Amino acid sequence: MGVEETGHRERPRDISELPGVGSTIAAKLREAGFTTVEAIAVSTPQELSTVAGIPLSTAQRIIKAAREALDIRFKTALELKMERANIKKITTGSKNLDALLGGGVETKTITEFFGEYGTGKTQICHQLSVNVQLPPEKGGLSAKAAYIDAEGTFRWERIEAMARGVGLDPDEVMSNIFYIRAVNSDHQIAIVDELFTLVPKENIKLVVIDSVTGHFRAEYPGRENLAIRQQKLNKHLHQLMRLAEIYNVAVVVTNQVMARPDVFYGDPTQAVGGHVLYHAPGVRVQLRRSRGGKRIARIVDAPHLPEGEAVFMITDYGIRDPEE
Image (cartoon, rainbow, N blue to C red; front, side, top):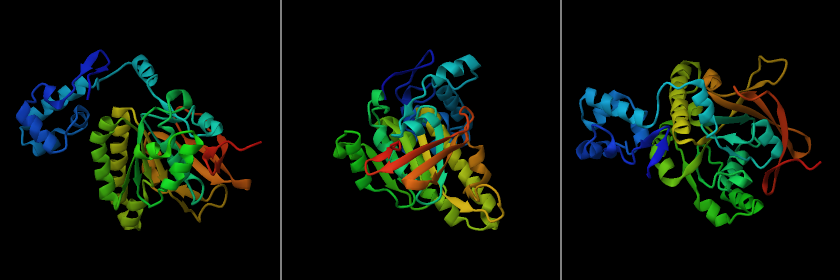
């Protein structure tokens, strides 16, 4: 990590530069997976104390120093407004959909796309993994993507076609997407833990999980397991929120929908995950099919965006606006 400016402070390049962390403690922390200042800042004193074999008071001091170094403190609303200017956006490939999202998919935010099978959730994830690599003037961030595939839906053939569609070299695009298949919910959580190290090292600016709830739903079926499922899912979402905020990364998750037979009016489908996803800050977008191969996206929840709808298409070359 190079030296970075955070607020008015110079961010330490290495964990050994934090006050109270000598080479011995730094070695123990690295061995336990705490390789960055950010990873230390978001940990608990108990966690750090246990893994590094250091007193609780020392762990508290180290965490406090890490948070100060990253400028994690009370801020004024004006400072927050200025920080918001650092938020970047990734184009979806559709001007209509970008406009609905306020200019594209945002960094420092979790964006959830939910809908029934075949509504375009996975296609959008593929497209964003390509588009994040575009230069900023073309709607990208000149960065890489991490793709966590929980359902076996990733297709390199689509990445290849989409790369050609935006004029990028397909092999180069594919070499900039870090792909991993999540085999169960614990593995999925462990992968995101790893990303706290991989994201800054590899200039990753987009993290995709397709789908975020699949494993949780399969492993904790029925009402009797609902509480433990929601608790675990909630912890996972907070883990993703920390990753998005600390590294200024766009996190995009997909979610399945299930039928609600008790709904007689309106849309009888709702996103899996219950109220946990309703309370996670971010943008929730419902997708549904329309006539003539078109798809409709609707903002369901976003604190800073007006409710609305947009029409887009899935073409051979990816996500595009419908031809009038």
